[in-house]
Length: 158
Image (cartoon, rainbow, N blue to C red; front, side):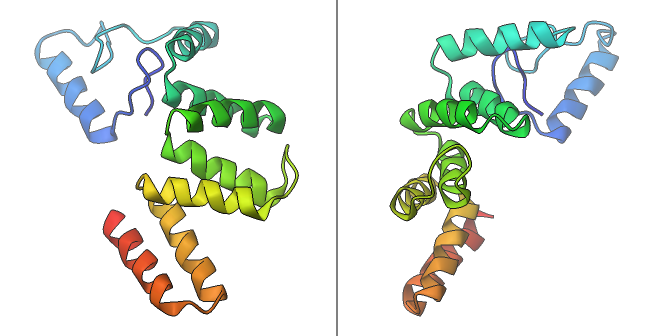
């Protein structure tokens, strides 16, 4: 779960533990973010306002999340812009998403070099799917020794 107030990812276990804590302290009527203790937004407009604030603060997670929303809406040009900004701030997932855009040619022209650049940047930053994809490309190019290394690293990353 992504908190729109502070752009922090919260796993289900942590969210449940916070719920239990709030129940024990009779705070369950006052739900708050685990990180910044702000109440969750009540409307989509409030959530968008929070994202806008986070983007103004150069938060790559918020930029990537808005890019994801634009992508789901079919606005590939806008998704590209947000993901590019997040990638400039070294967001591994944004680099991976950009590699997919360049591979599919959605909102941009298909470009093998740019696809590989963003895939490599994502892999270097620790993105397991990017590392796995690099391993698969190495298999296609019959560079099995490199493929094995990429796939082992991907497996270790999860």
